[in-house]
Image (tube, rainbow, N blue to C red):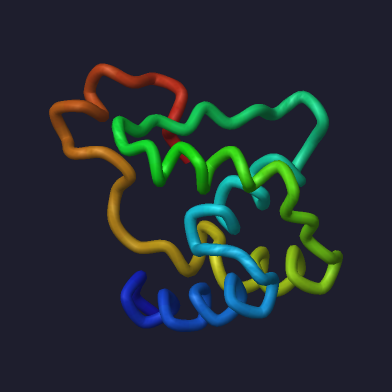
Length: 94
């Protein structure tokens, strides 16, 4: 399955959870562990507002299970960074 193939399912999970896809991603990361924090980056005030509202998104165990099954090392294709950037990073290899 390619990234584009699972994207509609991801968007459906966001809709089910009552949030935007970006909020779903941030809330999912925040739900992983108490010592993980997100650092959203934007120059757009509307996006900043959406990011802030993520703090009120509560993901059920069902939603987290659906996300974990849908988006994982086996289902995500392609590198996170372009080759030139990856060459400078030593913490993102799996």
